[in-house]
Image (cartoon, rainbow, N blue to C red; front, top):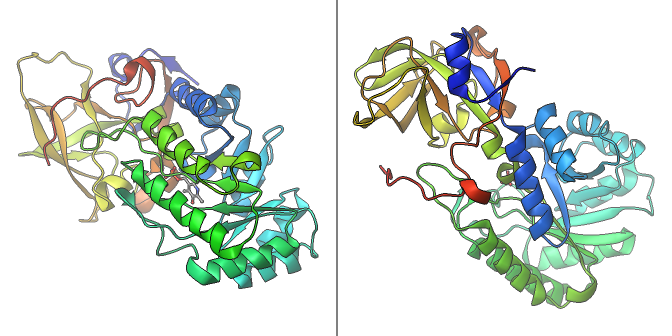
Length: 392
Ligand SMILES: *Cc1c(COP(=O)(O)O)cnc(C)c1O
């Protein structure tokens, strides 16, 4: 695949008809190295966040060997990665998926009900070599996408499930997910407090603890606490647990490993006031911008702008005929932006590509590798202060 110094270099070279995905594998590698150096356990990449081979390759190159997978197609994909340890962490699985996963060598499964425990045991022929993870429902604190209403068990039923799972598991773990894009570390300390109470209540010894994903990335309207602060709080919480010395730890970052590693490069096909009609939208890579109100950093490409020209807020409209194909933003771009201009939408590595569909005949992309730093970063020398553009 073509490598370019930046998205600007791409637009200076050609005027692409399709939207372009600009991958920055180096940014995924840097994020992975940070987690491997700073988290005292297995770092399992949440495969669903982005399964581009270029990003998986960069994560692997940095040393990631564990993968959190949630479906058979993901398992079949990830099973081709050498030395990969796959963890089937979806608490509700079909019988067929459990059987196939076990046949393919998966031994690590999560569950949040006695029904699911029974299903796992039946479909693996009462296997004696399972790592079973009980998924707790924990409160989402400062999360953009809470998950506790869909998955997880708590209170006495959780303690009872832990006792039952202990009887059949080779290794027993507890897992939770504080919700995606969690901005402050207290979500993890609260969750670890819940784990503490559950261990005491059940009287069961656990072998493993998986603190899930949820680690934040940087967006123009969201300047989360440094990841170092998250790690401090997490390690302190784990040290309080009545199991601390011999427990094996894991985490499952998705967003934090890949958000910075992909940009989208789009063209303006029409401008109406402060509305830009562009060649990708909510049915493509901009689902989260349309439906969850995410704001991404934006940068005009391909022509010089007078530095004194103000940045003004724009709303974006996607290419399909549907009126919900609308990204309210605000997205800040130079006041002179016009039809035919291109701009980069950054930090879209998490979930955007994974969700994109083909409604109305759109959803085809060109793809290039970009060598410059991501537009906003949580890591290393790029972890600079945000501009004061907090427009909401
Ligand atoms: C989606 C998911 C993750 C990754 O979440 P992020 O918020 O992207 O870090 C981790 N674990 C499980 C079980 C998930 O469903």
